[in-house]
Length: 427
Image 1 (tube, rainbow, N blue to C red):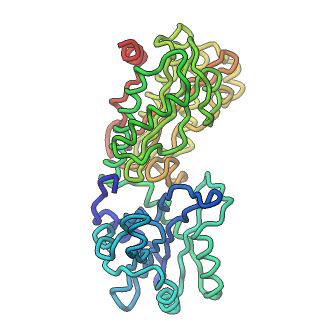
Image 2 (tube, rainbow, N blue to C red):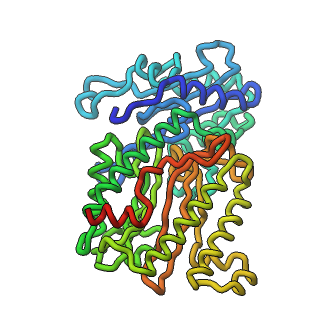
Image 3 (cartoon, rainbow, N blue to C red):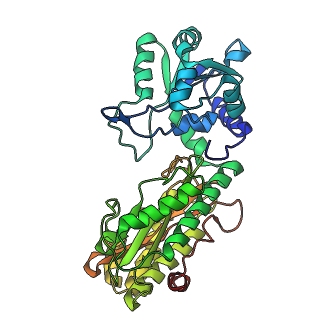
């Protein structure tokens, strides 16, 4: 395993919290992701379903977790099914988890082979009243591919058409939104790897460098620090590309005078970091670039202070909108009259949200209609985008809401002040 895993006790606690919210006599099932085909015999790299990982710590394909807290037989209250390995698989694919190793990773005592799942599940589900299925209910989700979970749900409903079905995701949205100290430590480690990548490219970027070359420098640093790589598709956007929010082509040559927007984060142990920095390709900001940069940084710092327990999501974004409106007036991009007539006039230059939950997913689970709580992890990422002037600036850190006091910035050591950026680029 490339990364240092969390202790099994963390996943045991996650399961206990989840099962405590199930209705009486309920059974819940979680399937691993598929290995997705591309063409011929090619496949995408395997990535574990984050819910299954959250509840078990198992990072292997063809895994199924079954939770049945009211099972009469105590050994059947938590079951994990993993792929049975053999000498042939070991030669071609490498080591797979043994049953003993699965228990060590997950804390689940009853470990069976995946090919026995259907028989055992049918026996257990016959005695259950409710079946919890794990559909994707994330507010950003747009799923067009049938998943292993989808196939299981269809099969299950065919076998048990008269059972009552509930959704596990509604429970997990709340549980996963608040992180354990061990989870925060994994995110912080991912942030530290991201810092190494960013410091690496500060001495590499100069006029004539290609965006994809910068991406390669990040990838090199991430992989050599035991990350699987990027937590999400990186944005390496120079010049006018910095005004495209989801620019991922990364194929332009950086030119003298350009601003370079870098939205890049390493993962570690399946936990994400999410950083944005915007730097001058030539090593120095011009007067206008510096003014916009300082304005974005000021909004980011002020917005961060608002991430405290009790804050409501919608109210938070309204307050950030006021901060941004003031900044845009100072930059002569908006007038006071425009802002007084339309409180959302700022969206012409800042059209996306300021923060999102961060964790096992880059846009992680979290209930947006409930007040913020301690140990939630958020990004803070305001930006100002000025297509008419050929550049956009976004700055982003990852912070932890604290019980008292200012949020903890997990990226406080990643250079962000303009003077420090210039000094490091010219060192």
